[in-house]
Length: 271
Image 1 (cartoon, rainbow, N blue to C red):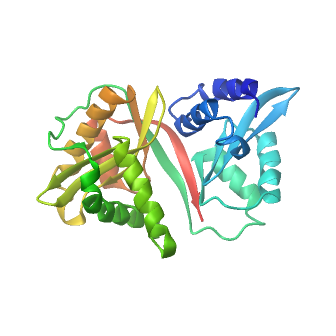
Image 2: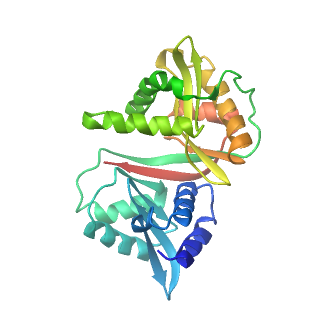
């Protein structure tokens, strides 16, 4: 991908920096290191003008795709080695792309067709929990089981199966070192955690929000998320987003009470 291509794709992504936060973060990586994700981003051109793009790495993420470009990208995916663990992004784009390739791919573990993407660009409506702070590396051994529990509960498989435990531990350590993990720890027990998954200068996307099952409904989630919004807006970006499964009514109520509002709708196909 040429530098001029990066600029064109960025202009497309900036039409909706909240929905396209992931793509913009990858373009920032590419801007600093042209070889970092060069082979993971493909573009669709019309009369030599880039109209849309597709990220194909650990996840498959479409960017402003049309019916024509989705056909082209579907063929590209069918001709490429399959390595992604999910397809995620704008609901219509993800589901349409999946419909094109599903006759040729194995059955997914799950399809989450309706995931509201939420955003807040102001101070939280609730008082932040003052005990929620950026985690430090000495917290790693306490946070790792909480991260594994959250991931397993949310995705349906453990992230530390087989030889992947050290890889996952290193990833969590990196998030902590980047000051992107937030937690409340009471007497060696993690009672709330969340992390910044992707970030740009405009938007941070939060993921991994978790409270131990036995403590849910006791305000840890609400006050904790208020703290995450406050800390993130002060130190990373003015807007904070996340996406949530439509059936997770408890989580949606928590985010609404903090001040999150619906922005768009995502979908995820999990393999």
